[in-house]
Image (cartoon, rainbow, N blue to C red; front, side, top):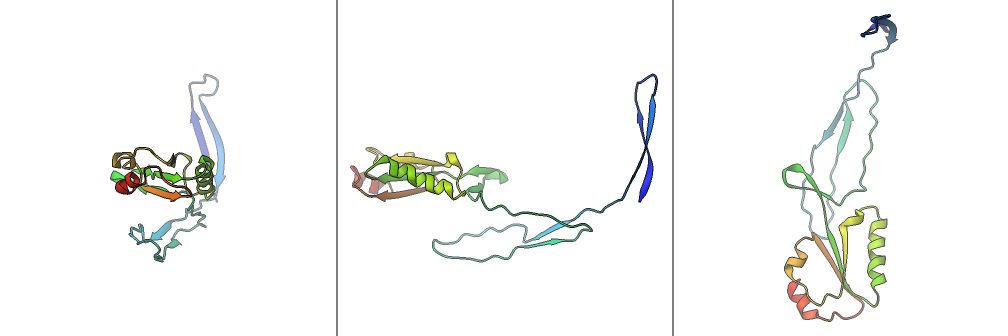
Length: 155
C-alpha cells in the first residue's frame, strides 16, 4: 500500500494550493502475447485448414479478452486499411421477394454488413464492368434468365 499527497495548484485566491491525501495499491498490468501474430492463408473451396492460435498472459494481473468472429466480411486493404467485401445476389426467380429473403438470410448470420449485399434480378444487359465492384457474385435460377447467353458470356 502506497500513500501520499496529491496537490492541486490553481488561480483560486482563497486556496491556491489544495492537498488531498491518497492511498492505493499498485497492480502490475496483464501482458498479452499472441502467437502467431498473423494468419494469412489461401484455401481452396470446400477445403478446411486448421490453425492453432495461442494466447498467453506474461503479465502480473489477470487477462480478460474476447474473440469476435462476427465481422468476417472485412478484409485487409491496401496499406493495412480495412474495406468491406461487396456481394451481388443475381437471380432469375419467380419473385423479387426471393432475392430479398436470400439477402435477409445472409444478414441474419451476422457475417455480413447490411450495405455489403446488392440485389439484381434478371438483368437485360450486363457487362463485366457492372460486376467488377463485387468481390463475389452468387447466381441462381428458379426461372429462366431472359438474356442467359449474355449472362454466361459475362460470367
